[in-house]
Length: 232
Image (cartoon, rainbow, N blue to C red; front, side, top):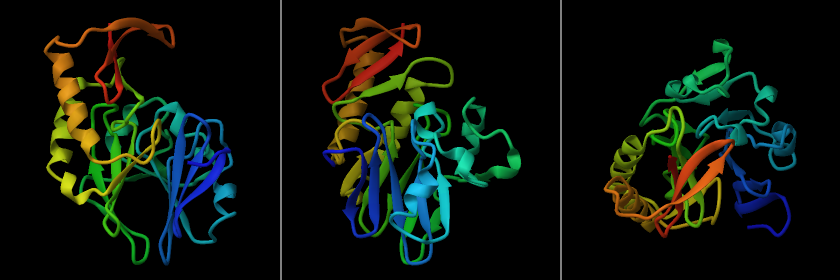
């Protein structure tokens, strides 16, 4: 990644914007561009996009945790899973919401992105698979050397495991994974490692340390690939 905060070119038509702790992505096709998430401290992502491309722009969300929606006010339309509308940070004006469903294909003009549902981290977590490169933009559920939130309302370890098992069946289609946190990019082996770690946590086989997050006591399970933060 870049040594300084801001845009980093991943190839000639893909960029990441690193805020230092969380990143969002810009993907351009021949006819349209898509922003995947919109930052936390950043509130002018639409303006920043214009530094790179001048194409009709859409905003799509991996999920609506507070560190992914910082520039949402700049957009008249927000594309996301309807399951994410239970999230307090999701858009509440329904005329702004544009639904994305599993297996939907977003065509940016010679560049197709497949929508993949990954509920568990949040009810409506999504990933986007670039069919031309095999790059998966995964949001938060898949990380290496990170911390994955699995505690609190709306989050489900069982759903998380099932989602990853389903994604694992397509691992041979994935050439690289671009998460919003921690190491980036990572390879698809992280999926299987997270499945094994999460199942071991569910079986009570992983020791934990106690911690606190946003005033909530949590259990912290280091499963090697990442740390799973779970209900106490």
